[in-house]
Length: 175
Image (cartoon, rainbow, N blue to C red; front, side):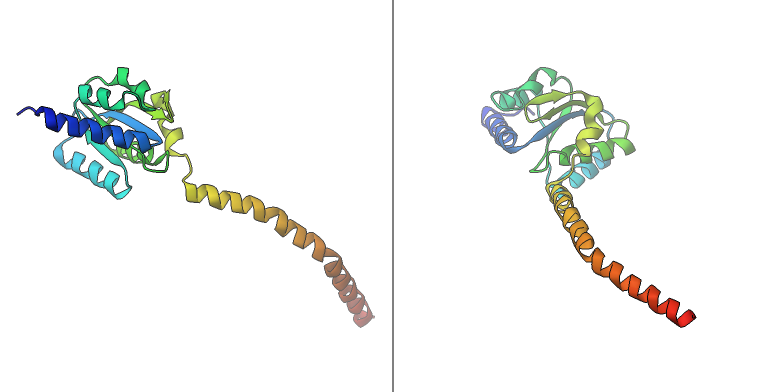
């Protein structure tokens, strides 16, 4: 049963709205995946906050027109599922990459990151983009390292003096 015009408009507007907010998108071919595998993929995506949709390519092309994922429009050929990242650019890539490792039938066809079309071999690189929390932790670590070094450096003269007194005491006790 085909979709009527109103249902198509809803799908296009929904995809366009998600594409406006998402930092990254992935299109993957799902031929050969059974219902259980697709359900598992959708569950993992939902738990990670990833928007995943299987839509007709003509509808997806219309939805992506004028968005930063306009670069993907020409590559939307064949049965594809679209996965849009949430706030984290690598979140959709991470889910698709992990699932594709277990199921070779899921084949990534397109990867777009902030309006740039990437090669499909970059999937692992995009999947390893650190999350915002990880970046914050790394930044705090960078800020904390010089402070720790400064504290150790500032306390070294006193520590050296204490070690000198302890050595002198040991010499006197040994004599």
